Amino acid sequence: MSDRSEAFRRYAADSSLVFGGLAAILLQLAHPVVARGVAESSSFARDPLRRLRQTLAYVYAVQLGSPQQHALAVRRVDSAHTRVTGARDPGLQLWVTATLAHTGMQVHELLHGPLPAELAAEVYAASGELGMSLQLPRHAWPADRAAFDRYWEAALPTLEVGPAARAVAAELLAARAAPWWLRLALPAAREFTAVLLPARLRDAYNLPDHPRRGRTVVGVVRMLVRLAPRRLLELPSRRLLADPRRT
Image (cartoon, rainbow, N blue to C red; front, side, top):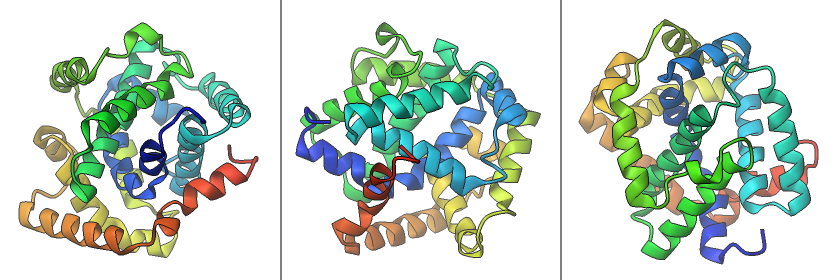
């Protein structure tokens, strides 16, 4: 969108933020209503790449797309939500949006360092648009980062990894339908995700508790991301925004 700063556009188009995707999903599943809705109607565990493309298409369209791309992406997601239990509940919309915002900034800090204050404020405000473009009331999004941190810390103790969440997570982590190259990356993805999650949730999902190994994986990913050309990191956003069937 035209009112975004160039620094924000670089942040939002950086596909390395996808490394937080699994952590965001597991955080969402730790909300019982989200877990039930996903277990009943979502196919992301059976077809993770398709689900990833759909999610990225929505995020890129809302944060980087034209008004037409934004509107089309919202209509598609809103239509899909009619079949998902609780998907239009403002409290659940807030939690799902919060997980995307939190993990995105968490991954950026791990791989690139802390965001400058001005950019962090812009990223935070734009992150709220992911929910407010759907059914999240504008007043429900915490007013600033300090308010968001208070909401986040209060929400974490209420989460519980129940049977539905464990079943969906097990299917997702098995990735039986994923391409071979994605299955090969799963051990590293599990280590990276374990670094991002609170210890209580990490243990509940039976993710590895290997701090040294986790730091090594994060270090390798950081090196690869910093060596990758910017055009390569931004390729997914360009392709999804250029394909009207996906945005």
